[in-house]
Image (cartoon, rainbow, N blue to C red):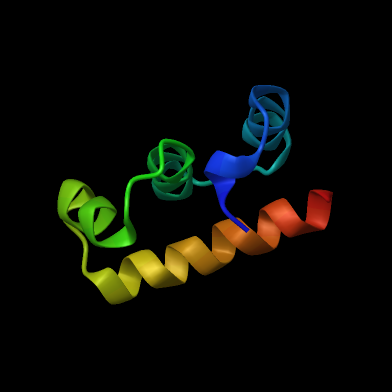
Length: 66
């Protein structure tokens, strides 16, 4: 599942309904723009392993709404 594959309407729905933390929202926005996880880690000044954990949490929240 890639966030960038969803429609704008679906992405907006996830933004409103997933109750993301600020870090999760930042990651969600970058992934919606198809930015690789490694670059997200660099931009957010976090380790790749931390970004992977955040990414997993974002995916779980999105999947609950599908």
